[in-house]
Length: 407
Image (cartoon, rainbow, N blue to C red):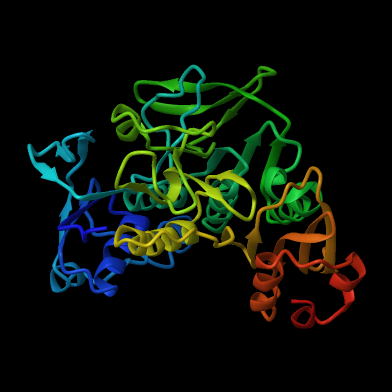
């Protein structure tokens, strides 16, 4: 395979910036174009719902120093959005009138917040959280608000609830689920998060549907539930998940997977010649799981971006990393590795749920499918090895044995 003369990366988030940097780190001498819609240089998203929203910092974690891109001969075009891809002509067009030919193309267009499909779901004054500007505006709103309603009890909703309580707002979280985060960690572990927030003063309205966002042209007034009750609010945050930005890929004729992502093989390659996808949009065939998975977390974007560089330069290495994410809520911090099905996997708890110092494991046919350490920080390497190796263990061993020896 001839070395490409020009590689275009569409999307300047963590995945795209990591791909561009890894190309240079691997000694690629050709042209690298990194296109980003955000006017800022690439930054990481986790601090937005943590340190920025809490008020501990006004800045995210930048992927690289501002001078990095120029020093490494990466042509970075902030505030420029790709509008069309012509696969046959190997051409990317942008909203500034530019036309960019490529030998290889990486799509790293990320996600956007999902909207709420109810009356009033498009009212001015509704908040979502995806960008640094979103986080700064929401923090200011939390600081001034008396009553906050958060629609959605997932990771963003939960972290935002913790931040709003830290700013002394009265907080209500609405979600049709019975237990927050149960789709990822199950009801037992999800109950730990529910109880923590309740202790901190969060009002849960679980098992309830939002029927309407109330208000008018002057802004949002509150949230009406399906039962007719209206929850008044100064601030309403919609945190009902993220949708992959695949419009560009779809219009170009790339195959989409059942979960809405761009279908890629184990090496992150689409069916189109020399076109790859990474990060939130990549529905990646993972050899360990024998199926496509699409992961919207920080580590996945970073690791896939770095990994795809080797395949852009002629290798064909499968991406094998296990999913990983972390969260911080009040005094609770945790890390999760792997991919569990909490509805069917066996939950094993090492430590004490009540004290919020424990490690949870999910076993599938006697093998470790996932592990989550909560306020326990000494066993990260062992947990990673247990998950990556799909270690065969018993529940009793996980509860009592030295984890490093099991790994």
